[in-house]
Amino acid sequence: MAWEEWDQLKANSAEKGTTAMQLNRVPDGDGAGAPPPGGDLKVDQKELAAVGDAAYRLFDRLGRQGRDAWSVSQSAARDLRTQGFALGDAIDHVQERWEAQLKTLLDACAHVSNHMDFTQGAHAGDEHYIYDVVSSIATLDAGFTERTQR
Image (cartoon, rainbow, N blue to C red; front, side, top):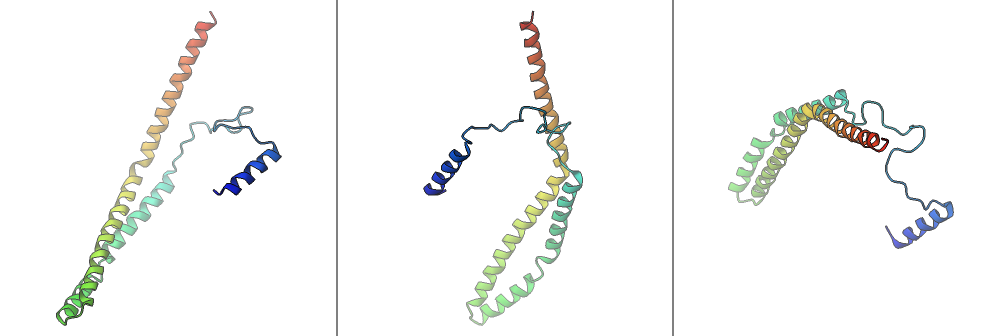
């Protein structure tokens, strides 16, 4: 952000009278901004399954078709090299780089596909953990309130 932009933002804020700070929290009042019942960590299994399925299909197709040009490229590189052309080494280099990139992409697709299989369970576990922690704080607060009212 440029200094002039910062000055302009400060001037705009001063004009509007919006110099107060608001912390990231649930607003006071009628609870309209409160998280939905049952928690706010939501994972839709249908969407996760679609992502995992797309990753698996990409993995499968790349695995089958990603190396279609390998033998032709190697043959061309060998023929050009034996005829004394430097292009043979260049084709071989490109093919090696393609193979390395293909392996990286296949690993990433497999990782995404496998990860989607357990994500919903992990999020459900997170939600239960957060609920337990927050519930225990509320219980503790209630106990302190009881002790102070005696």
